[in-house]
Structure formats: structure tokens, C-alpha cells
Image (cartoon, rainbow, N blue to C red; front, top):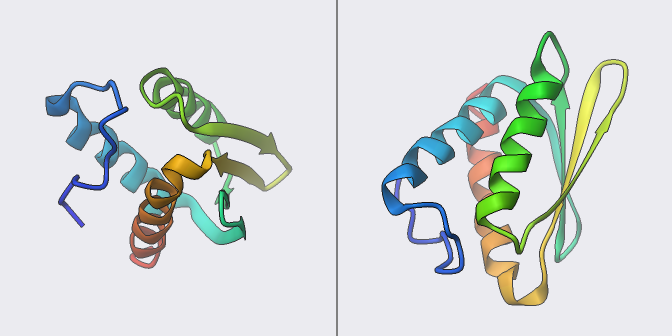
Length: 111
């Protein structure tokens, strides 16, 4: 899934930086994803194994992603051994969430 055609035009991250950001998310998911569930068509829930520095890493990525893709709403909840990341979008960006869910599932399978 190296093709970034699913990234919407409303994303303000410079095109040359997009592969780097996607690689950061991919690395996080391949290292830490424990479960993925589609709560509703516009809501994706990811559970990530916690560990040293993982929560800071997730919060940093979420903050940067929110800065360029304002259509995402991220909610991060920390537990003893996991970090829950809820991601939601508006109806206009449902296809972006679909692509993100597919990419995350594929990346997490390589764990």
C-alpha cells in the first residue's frame, strides 16, 4: 500500500512529507497494534500495546496529524497496558477512514 492516492486533497501536509508521516504511522502500528475495530462507519478504534515512550509517541503523531488533516478527530485514552486511539471523521471523509482502516489492518498483520 505504498500508493498515497487515498490521502485527500484537504490534507495540508506537503506532498513530499506524506510518505514519511505514513511510515511513522506504519511503524507504530506494526510494532504496537493489538486490535482494530470499526465502532461505526465513521469511527475506528485502535488498541496499541503500551510501553516506554509509546504514549508520547502516539500523542505526538496525533497532534501533528491534526495539524494537517483537520477532518480527523482523535481521542487517546491510556490504560495500564494499552493505549486506545479512537479516530473519527465526518461523512465526507468516510473513504479516508476506510483506507486508513485497511492500511492499519494490513500493517498490523506484519507484527
